[in-house]
Image 1 (cartoon, rainbow, N blue to C red):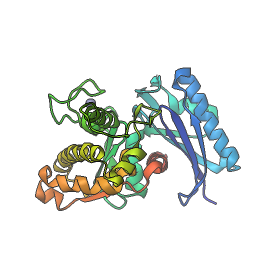
Image 2 (cartoon, rainbow, N blue to C red):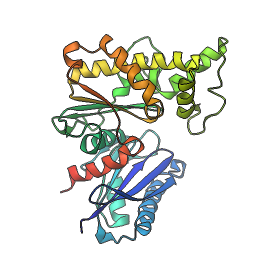
Image 3 (cartoon, rainbow, N blue to C red):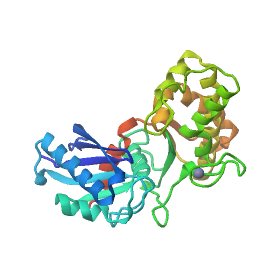
Length: 321
Ligand SMILES: [Zn+2]
């Protein structure tokens, strides 16, 4: 019998975990709050608890598990298991991998969550079988990842590839990163919420902001999807603008990387996919060079919410020694 993998999607608000068998079937799942306010060591303890619960749920012994793979937010040195910096968990030069190996007695391999997401799509999902893949994940933030020549590209100090912070307009809206006019400042959920709010302030009628996402006080992706389906003029206008800027960002990336496949994923994309994908495709010829565009397959994420979990398994397969 082949060995199992424990896979984790560690976010600023929750930790999602699963056990995956040798055929990449998910056998059981566990979800727990991250509680970053309790401190770095406490979060490590909660990650250990998620793994322990998963192993109990699937009746696994330590010897049944080859390794734990994880995607986590921040700048991650996968080789050393070190989180150099995380924006939403108080990890600074934090030895997450070694700590968890000590707590669990199982090898623990960690990578940046968005990079792990594209790795998942490349190994098991929408970009499977392609050597050159680029992905954008649109949600509260805009993340992105790049696989070049069958290898994840993370830059010289693991901080690449912040595709959501490419600057589209130097005089654009302020972005969370401190710059102006980044792709995220036009297409992230805070930007979408800001545009809806501004239309309502100018007199447009919309109930899009009646119930907000409790996690980040932004419009709910499900509400956007519903409004688009119903032909709500505010949703249509705001998301048309989002598609235009997404196409600008994606067009840049297609021109720079000349990928065989481009994957668009993330919470907003997933909820509004049937509307958003064709809208982006419509605008792509304005930005991508024709010769590049005709060669690229433009696809929605295949793994959806589980992209990071599958990517965590891919990370283990790529990095196990
Ligand atoms: Zn930015």
